[in-house]
Length: 251
Figure 1: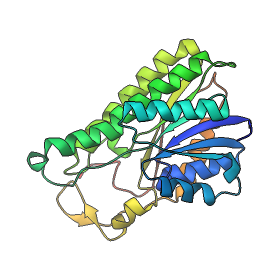
Figure 2 (figure 1 turned 60 degrees about the horizontal axis):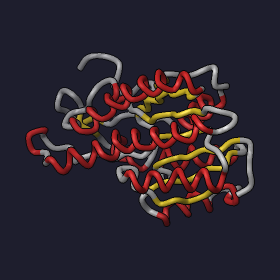
Figure 3 (figure 1 turned 180 degrees about the vertical axis):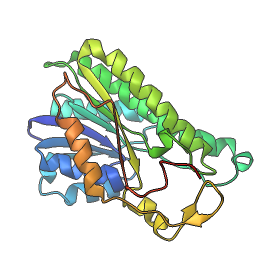
């Protein structure tokens, strides 16, 4: 990989929002390190770009501290620095009543959504504090669930609320080292994960109703905007959502 203008790591880069953001960053002259659990999906992402020579696939379980360290070591070795981390990888648990969740299901979501973001942030700090020019940017993928839950979503909702706390602590602790951190909360982006929303999803009042979705390109544009800012400016929190989704209001 040659040295481009900037270098990014995108977790969860094998599908959905992660893949779309990774491809957009490649189009904007980044070298992009693609992280995810499945090597084949990461290579699919790279091969969809006209700039695959600037993509590096590193299969990674973000809940594994050793694997995360290897990811960031590979990025530093191949690219020389790190300008952007998009903490996007995540998982969900079955939508069952809270008392029916197993401890293992709870822990799996916490490990992927919260511990994974922390481990990646920690390694990003290690590189960003020491490099020249110093600093960088971290963008955390929160969720509408960082503000309000869906029914039967305790692990996901709890972790996304916690990601907001991690974002604020990261923004504060990064100040002295020119590390900016912000969070994007996305409501119903049109990905495979939200296909079922078109036919119907459980509402707070117990009914099942279809929900509108927003084109993925608007989410990508928002992430690109956050990433484009100089390090003395930061979007701490940004919500992108389908205008008519049932989020703002009572019901």
